[in-house]
Image 1 (tube, rainbow, N blue to C red):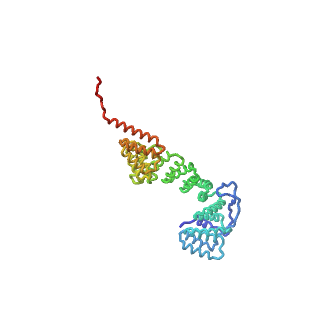
Image 2 (cartoon, rainbow, N blue to C red):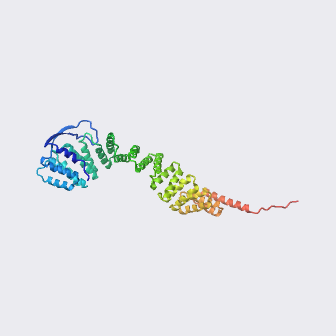
Length: 444
C-alpha cells in the first residue's frame, strides 16, 4: 500500500501532548520557493490541541490497523470515530489525514485531495509542522495527477514555511517547473536539490541527474549537459547514457569522441541495433577509416542486424571502395543499384567497372542507369557508356551513345569531339586494312 509520508511519526508525537500546549512556529510569508533567507522569520505562537483522552485508544488501534495495511479495520475505526460527538480540531484533522492516505493508497487522488483539503480548512488547534506537512502532501498529490500548476503553487506555499527545505522539496518544485516548460526557473531548484544531497555525502539520485540533464537539453546547453551525463555513466552505467553522451558530442561537433564512445560499446557487444551499427560505420567513414567501417557493415549484414537494403549496401560498398577493395565493393553496390528507385547507383557501379577495365559490365550498368533515370548528369553517363562501347570496338554503338550525350548542354561539346574521334579512328583502322600496293615499275 502506498502511503504519504505524514501520519505515524506526527501522530505518535501528538499522543504524548497535553490537552493544551503553546508551541512556537516560524512563518515567513514573503519568502519565495527557492530564495535564500536573508532575515530571520518573525515568530508567533498558536494554541495546539491534543487528542482527547477518551479517543486515545481508538486512534492507537487505528494507527496499528493502518500500519498493518488492514484497511477494512482502519475504515471501521474511522467510521466509529466520525460518529463521536464534539470532535475537536486535531481529532478531525487526523481522521481526514487517515482517510486521505487510504484514498491515496487506492489511487483515488481526487478523494485524497478532498480529505487533505478538509484538513487544511482547519485553521486552529493544529501543530504548525503537521499543518505544513499536509500542504506539502497536497503538492505531491497534485503532482501525481499531473496538475503541475497546482503542485507548484502548494509546494511554493510550503516553502514559505521552511527554514531549510530538504533536497526532495527542491526537486519537487524543479520538476513541476520543468513539466510546465519553465526551464530557467527549474534549473536553480534542481541544482540546489542535487547539491544539498551531495553535501550530505550522498550520490545524487538517478532521476534527479536525468532531470538536470533534460533541462540542459531543453536549453540546448550541451556543454553543461555533458558532465551530468558523465555522472550518470559513472554512478548508473547504462547503454542509454553512453548513447546520449555520444549524441551530445555530435552536437558539439566532436566526432572523434563520439566515435570513441560508440567503438567502446561495439567492442563490448553493446551495439545490437541497425541504427547504432550504421552510425558507427558512418562515423569511421567521416574520420577516414573506411576499412573499419566496411568490416562493421559486413559483420552486421552477415548477422542479419543490418537490413540488406539499398541504403546499407551503398554505405558498405562506399566503405570498401574508399578502402581500395574495388572488386569486393562491386557485389554490394550491385545489390544497392538493383534496389534503388533511380539510376544513380547503377551509374556509380558503371564507373567502378570502368576503373577495373571491365567494359562489358560497365556498359550494362550504365545502360541500366540511363533506363532508370533520375541522374544528376545523364549526358556524362551516356559519354561513359559510349567509352565502354568504344573499348569493345562497338563503334556504331559508341557514336549512338555520344550523340545521345550531345542533347545535353553540359556534355554537348565533349560528346561532339568523341563522335569526331570515333569517326577518325574508324577511318584510321579502315586505312590500315587497305592493301599496300608497291609500284615495281622502273623508268629507263
